[in-house]
Image 1 (cartoon, rainbow, N blue to C red):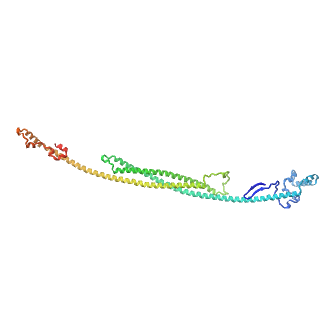
Image 2 (image 1 turned 60 degrees about the horizontal axis):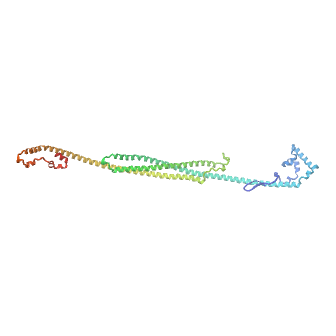
Image 3 (image 1 turned 120 degrees about the vertical axis):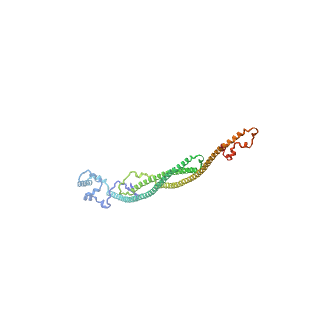
Length: 440
């Protein structure tokens, strides 16, 4: 048997025969008394093989002349004695009938095999058609489900991108406020430093390390500490903004890929057997350009969303910290500024009181100086008034030295005529050595 092919349910083979004739009827009339049929119907011999007419194939005559020549040839084989040897070599009628019967059985077996082949082929075609239709429907359904997954993740990405854009705008606004607050602290710091610089111009005992100087130094320290904290948070805000923008870039790139994939899968989902643009692509079934699996595909987008959410949470926390920092630094600087102002007010009041006291004491001292000067002038006048009595006394002493002999006596007039001593005449001058010297 020669193998032809197989289906899901049957195997097809061809019988090993050297003569395979076309199918004919199995009735007895189809193979008995064929010569009258040829005489009555010359066209009935058309089904016979070419070897049957091999002896007359070289004669190129019309059909009627060919048929007459055929009858003459057969008549000669029957009636001429020279052809008896040929008659003795031919088959018997039984052999002829057996050959026909064998051919009929082979024909019937071949027809049955062909009928089974047709039946199995039709059934296989129906099965493959149904399998193809089911596979195509399942593939369309899978593409539809894939589109639903893409739409779902695209919606999630869109929502997350909107949230991230809002968060980036909020963090940018807080960063701008922080930069402005940091720039505004430069003015109070410069004022405090100038105050300390100008207070260094105080002279002598006024160059004191008082409460005002302590508060000014503390104010400078507080402002610099606030500036340092603001700079640290500003650096963190800049880094967080860079991280947020990187996460937004990843989300937008994933969104762009999702949009492209949705467009391609949507076009594939709407393709039908009657659609335009379908065709054969050589070797496409062996090509596998996939880079991910469904689990890794969904995990990639989920990781991007989780990364963006964690970035947004860190950004919100940083914004809260910056808000708290702005409030706390503002309160600290304002409190220290108020403390310095109170210290300035108290010190100015103390300085004003001391100045008033000094002015009062200065006025009293000037008054005392004036009175002392008047006293000195009075003393000088009194001294000038004593010049004449002094001259009189010295003249008397000089005259009494001329007394003769024993008359030159140290009597009471002699003792009373010595020049007066300032300390004895003016006991109050002991407190003023200069005036005492002046009087003597």
